Image (cartoon, rainbow, N blue to C red):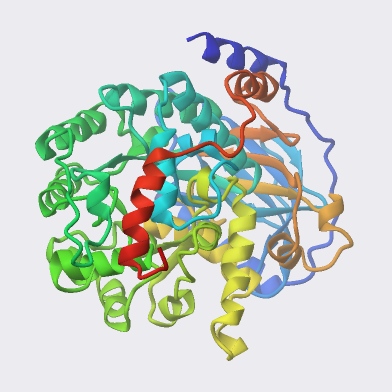
Length: 523
Ligand SMILES: [Zn+2]
């Protein structure tokens, strides 16, 4: 509890700076777009209802650049309560005034797949394949609840400071303290103010089961907890913490086909149906997993998951590196979302996900950082850049390559679609919730003045977020996180960790013998 108290204390020292009002009139361009927007305001304003007895906080972002169909428009954007209520070249000032001059307003991005507690091991594990990497991760995973809280805070802070207003945390659970683990992560996300999709990482098969046998006759141990007990924990978490209206969501999220039984997948689908929840899992991240799928199911894991009812428009699938063309057709037909984690896939040698094929087939694709032990950061803008330009080497036809504007759409609207939130977030439009990022275009890394979105995505933006809002709540003000004291947080991280290198990992050494044999590597 001490950890939380110290971090929260600094919050009150953060004050919002009110900017003077300026009436720069430079909107003569893009009239067609503005007319369209005003028309939409008239159409949509009827949807904005003020709850009885609730005093709604309003603010107006004045003279800010937003992307138009071609180029940019300079507009005022008004927010009342959680919603964007008006967008027009000039609006009557309402509530707090935010100076948007020389700033770019974009919808918040989604960090659509990560594992917060891996923060404690970032930079530690050498570059080895996932199957060996995860063995070392397990060797050093022992966590306590304070660490769970702190790494969730860190994940939220780094995601927010690099453009993300939502995070999907495939959260590692402490055995015996599963419910408490989820509670502490939820607490962290609420304090920092990011929109959270907590997806408890559950499995019902042992780690050794995740490796193909290859005819070698490996022995798999029973998992320590029954499938039903795992589902019971998940249901308790849903009842306690799933409050979408407050920005906290729980997702049934089996680790992946490599560590989960059909019964666990089906149980998650049942929970999803009963409580209207999105689903999440890892899918065919490595070549070894594709081999395992053939051994386990005698067919593609994608076809198998489809038959289990796991794939739908409420399902997001992390990695998707080793899919066939037939698998891609299934993803398109089921409207499943692919979460592209390029840095992790490179770091672990997993491969390059066929993202251009997904896009060509009409599959929704968005971006994730993946956990900090396989990235080894939570810089969402970096993941988006890498996840975009990586595919220029996979297709000689440059007309298929991902443009910066497409990257922005994938990271914002694509992320929202993957979480069935596209009606609420993912775009700057009247009636949408205000999950917004305001970038400072006078920052050195965004200068000189060229194409703001082009430089944000293709450059190396550094500390460029000036303001951010989640559900209309001001979560970054003047470049600083408002919900917690980041200085105290850094001190806690420092105090609770130590420098180390070349740590021996008995479990990795044990797994490596089988891995090299089954992957036909020299022993
Ligand atoms: Zn992952």
